[in-house]
Length: 133
Image (cartoon, rainbow, N blue to C red; front, side, top):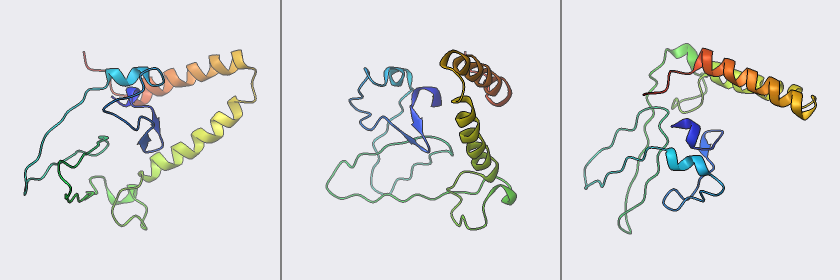
């Protein structure tokens, strides 16, 4: 559902998921919500790369995040004790993308649109898993 979450860095721009501004974030309506109500002593595992939100049901609650380093060690910065930063190749690609975008912005709008769409299609073709049916 990443295409519907309006990602900015590692966060969603949609701050109020219970009453989202669908005029501003229309694709958010397509995101698949999952919800649960937890009881004392229960643990919820949220897989890597899953965005999540929580709301305390009472005035007191405790939440603990634990990150597992599920990729080989060379993917993590040695200073990343908890494994919660982007893997090194992803961080490098993000930096390179910023440079690519800066370069594309030097083009006239119609050319920028064309080449931006062409690059986006190449990224989807080479990097994205197929959408489920």
